Image (tube, rainbow, N blue to C red):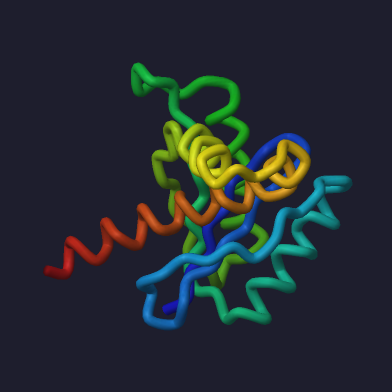
Length: 141
């Protein structure tokens, strides 16, 4: 089953997808947010093209495990996805620190600031999805 990972932000949505075996995540794109309808159309195109059966939405909880305003935005977006794409399962995944990990990895790779800004959300989506896939894999063992 192919899955899609999302890092939902105010200005962008980082998008990743799994391989057909559901073992590896890879970056797809970063959607520059304009209008909600356009954002959903972009996601619908990816869902159809990649035959996505599950969407994993990053949930940026606070470090004390509470739901803040940023996490509530992700929850609301996930609920909208459930309504809009009823044929696709939507799950939330705790994504604390994924953007920080992505930023650190890009810094270590000596990626320029301009290039980091362009790929950080997509890389965060990859980390969200890969962590989810790894957890699913460990459950099967």
